[in-house]
Length: 225
Image 1 (cartoon, rainbow, N blue to C red):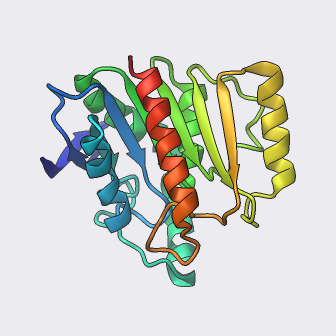
Image 2 (cartoon, helix red, strand yellow):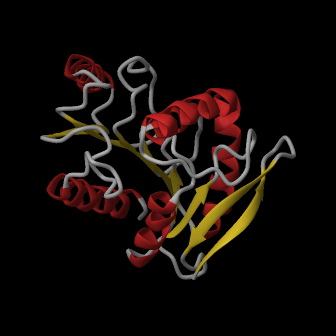
């Protein structure tokens, strides 16, 4: 079952969330964290995919603090507006992530899986919050600059080698920092561009997306027991 519901953050702000799966029978919870393009069709598709794999998935509308119902196109105008909205809500983002985690916890151990901005939020959640089973970051741009933070749970990170927005020297530095500090942070690099998991983007790479998805499900299965 998939539906749109309302979450209430700890400061009283309400935001929408798209949920899928049955928390009573799921093996655990997954919080899906959006790109800068809003809670669009691509992001709304993901909870159903996680539900099909046995999880109860919650995708919060992270822009609702600034504007409700945001769905942006994958073009220059959408990117510019998405960046502006992200900047407007970013300071309170972890509060809203926490609200989604609280709901997902009805199903048991919770992991967060984020894409683009959401990939950065997944790393933030892993380093700022306690009690998560795991975190998965797809092309999170903040990871190199926040490589010195310590994760409180296992983390899986996916990067595209051809992603000009996240240079490989930064990714390499992130990998090196985690190898020294925390072997439970595992990073994979793909012959792909930024956004390679999203079939609505020109950067979509079917093979990289399939491999990263398989690795993500294996990771979730391992940390959710």
